[in-house]
Length: 289
Length: 127
Length: 149
Image 1: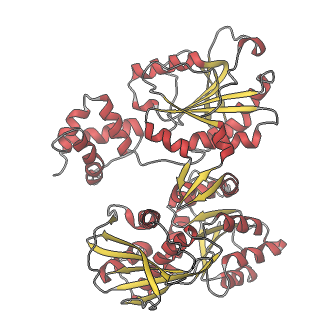
Image 2 (image 1 turned 120 degrees about the horizontal axis):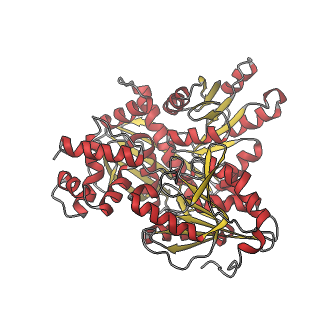
Image 3 (image 1 turned 45 degrees about the vertical axis):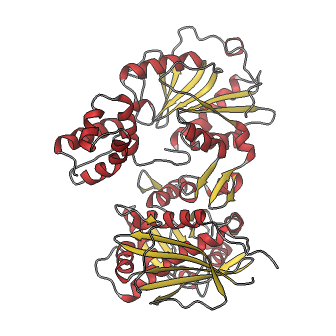
């Protein structure tokens, strides 16, 4: 059963807009192959019927986009944001939090945890003695959270973007996979969280990584998420979005700073209180599971 | 920029050649460590070596140690591309002077990633 | 008498799938678990010696071996030499990864390739077998250990 031209055009357009992926003429079979399992799961007779559903069903659209996006799992994805983290964000936070000596980071939509553990590696390398750090890794998928807790990655995943020196320092072989060290796991805590819903009680974060996930939501939800994130980022904190994402046209509660190729967002509070008193209490008792 | 591809498998050399040629490298090939050394000794010193471990005559690990013994070749980037994937083997290779390590099987992206980490490639073109 | 250590079916399957998907996947995924009589074509094996001793072999029909060669070498026309080389590299990658699953240290041999069946010595036992289907034909990956080792 082949996908109709109009269905293919819709999917092609959606993919290009939402994920920048190009499904040109000739790739119909790929769209078929990637959407058919979802179509079946959704109870649709075929891909065309499923595409009709996609036009109105937000949740299915997100799943379809996921399936259409070639899995970009990688360590230190895009590299530049992690460079910005090491060169600017972390040093700033270290200067601002000397009174508590704790860094609080949120990896929102953490997927299988490569972002969280990449950050943990950098913290291990750059956090001064006597300091603690906690990375909260959240996702809407319990399967993904279990993967983060397990901290195991396939050989093919290990080849992507990870310096060999870090591989040997932070990982050990378990069967055909590689498992992250206990030291790094101690820095990462997982929690179930649906970005589109009201947040559970969360600590104030110094740095938030909210990368490549807003694309799955409509404009209104994006604005809403950013507003709720704004409330839990420290006034002198940082927000990082995906390389092609920006808050510019979405929300005026954020200002932007450039660090090399990276756009970093900061709460645009009119009265930015001094660091020593404004940040307040850090729940350092938030130990991992 | 020049890359020297060292592997006893023609198929693997072909795969690697296509990947690095797409990135703008000119390539040389060798079927084992001694043939590779012959290139360097003849003055054909590459910017990058992609090195298999298990080869006849001279294996990749030995090749790495020989290159690192020669100060004239200190700017050559050495990257292992091998099935040797035990933690201990990777430690050994890095200790012997390899700069990077790719485990077979790999995708083209993996090679590009590593070359970017090494600063030899930027945004898909030679740095 | 020491217990024979062997790789798990899951782990070997993961290895074979990763090798296939990296170089041969694309539009034809490898489908595991569909046993079929593999018509004699090409086979290749590597042996592992050291803390663990065993043999890893691959058997492919002629057409499949030629297709593997075409894709890996990026050519249209295949010659026996090249087919042997490609099949040898395939078993090198699978065998090398199986070796890393087992206790070390150990050494991987260079591949032995044959048009036909690679002979196995009579004192080996098959401990693991992956039957798979790819590009319309069956293939087989086996792990053998020495009996009584």
